[in-house]
Image (cartoon, rainbow, N blue to C red; front, side, top):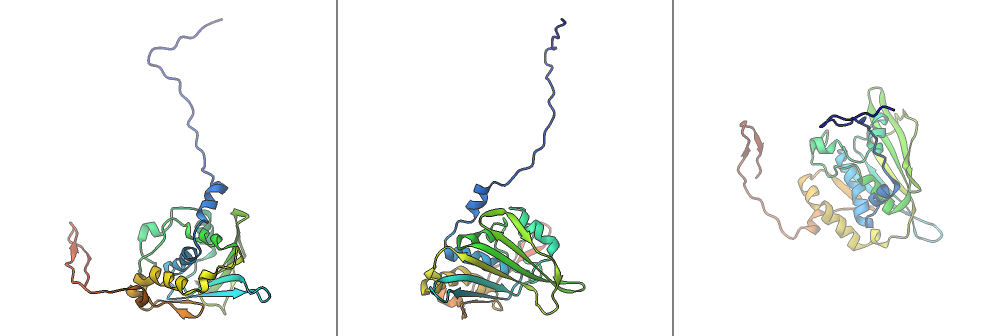
Length: 245
């Protein structure tokens, strides 16, 4: 039998292996954890990031027990085409918001960056659907996306169909509510939402957010405010990046 002696300094080569990262259930479950008001706020932020100027939040109650049965968030934003749904709902991180930091049409500041906000809805209920309408070259089209907390990795994307009678935007519906969250109908809950969106509503006066028919008033969350003149900020290339008054 022959023996092979390795030369000094010689290293045995191994094949490089590439693997794909799989998102585990426990990681997704952590994204669903939030208190009810911040969870609802995330859905509102998603509408604002889609250039919505009007967002309505409505609560439905069980006729017999009187408890909260579903929550619906309507926005009149741009929506998004079905071809984008797989990317938007199939990835955590890598959001388009990290690249631009501004909304696509109105150039308003954006809130989220990681694509995790939609999972916060499961802090409120066990079933969430997104009914999306968007403007296409041939006219408005619509489709539906559904997610259940029993399998957060299974995203159901419905058929894309013509929707000539619908206007662009997204309707998010949360069903199978965990419990009757009294905070949504309380003055404290409304105040917390007003405080969350106060600065945004002050900066973008055309935006209207209504909770159960009551418009959020940013003035109730601001103790005082004043204007100050700021010098322009100029970069090395001579470009003025900001100027405020």
